[in-house]
Length: 149
Image (cartoon, rainbow, N blue to C red; front, top):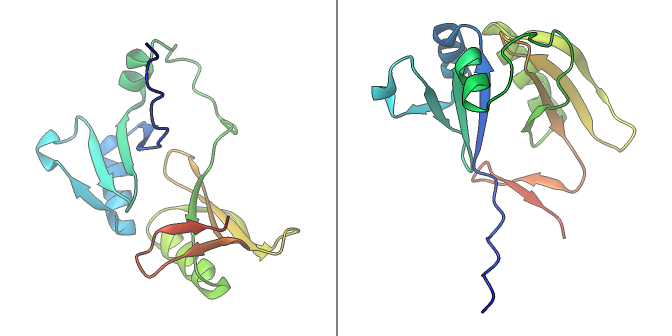
């Protein structure tokens, strides 16, 4: 008897943060809807539409994953988050909006080599977010990303 293959799905991104109160305030100010508020400042969950963004203290996340707490990387960690948009104007609006709420502009919006328009901001812990409109990736009326076949 064969074991059924699990259905692949991406459900949660958990970010290790140095100051959970500050990070909760930042992501709340971006407009993500916080859920399960009864967790207080132990962990925070935000509804992002199709997945969940979770915030957890850096040291506790490292311990949970059985990884060393130190040294915390100061540079690029090999991952970016993305906020896909419907237009170049929306990219500019989102970048300005995030910076106005405490993000750092990492890279100004620009036309890309693949025909898109993209810029980057970093959150208070340095997690990079690409804000982008890209060919072949549509953002529907439901604000969800739809990929062409």
